[in-house]
Image: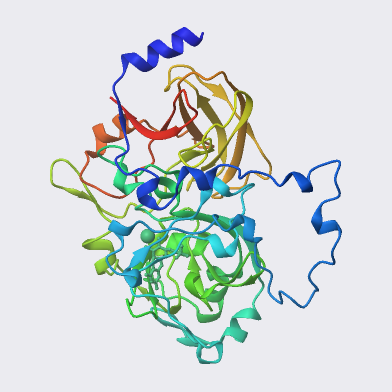
Length: 423
Ligand code: MTE
Ligand code: CO
């Protein structure tokens, strides 16, 4: 068995990602356990038992322990021309379950974070409605509310990986996704209040930040499951996530989830804004562009082991990962240890929710040999996550958007893990 795996690896050409962890500010030292202070180990009584701890007034708003200070959002220097129009990435490799803590949700803004005093906040609804209306935050909170978990993924997640493996990290190749529980009012309920003209077929959602983000959304989606949200994971939205109000467009590309939402206009055709014409279209090999590629296709990632999470010892380990689909629930996740030759079905952990991250695990034994780890998700519509070659055959390599292909992590004999592309 071990020999067979070795053969599989040597038969293929493996191209490693260009940018190593060192270049990204992560030394392997900081990833490994530091040496313990023997005085604190059994049977001794540790030092923290012998002194009083901090009082309840030390952290009015709780912060993570200093020993987890490595678990942060990170940006890639060469992708960050200016921080106001940039992106940072969720540290997926350090998270458990399916909830992304608010302080770790990746941020993508085109004109910086708008700081809005809620007393100055208004949501305007105009265009092809019976009654144009303006709502305060308190007005919105009087409507029946919904609480729903949804993933938000930027269409550019993995965009640097179309032509080959570029960034050597789970965080940088998959971290433009987060999953939180939103509280808000269904847009279909707000429409009851304004009424709609018969020819209202499209919506223009407009942000109030300096980028003036605008996107067109078809009325069917608005009526189906869009939410005007004011809370994430039980507390008010973070400023960087659109405080006090953002649009939630479940399963569709992150760009449409307009933050600092100020206006919703109903019209009879798409508005063809900058964000959906010059950007967020997918350039194909023949020079034509796919337009309105809203749904985020089924995708998965192994979050451990991964480049940031080397295998530190031989024996049994748990492969952990996340899968998601913009079309509904995840039905199955398969994991391969030999670069896609053989597959085993992983365990899905409840809750398995639609258009939400889903946690999977599967045990594996590492005996010090090389392995090529892959995960492949299948959703309830039976869509199967493609290989990069399958995707390239249809889409070419010009686009940066909608790369939902299977990634490969190479475990080397020393336990190091690299993002590789199989030739
Ligand atoms: N809304 C406004 N008003 N301004 C923006 O720059 N960025 C969009 C979208 N909504 C953006 C916006 C993009 S491209 C994405 S991927 C998501 O917000 C990111 O949401 P997040 O910052 O909460 O992760
Ligand atoms: Co985006």
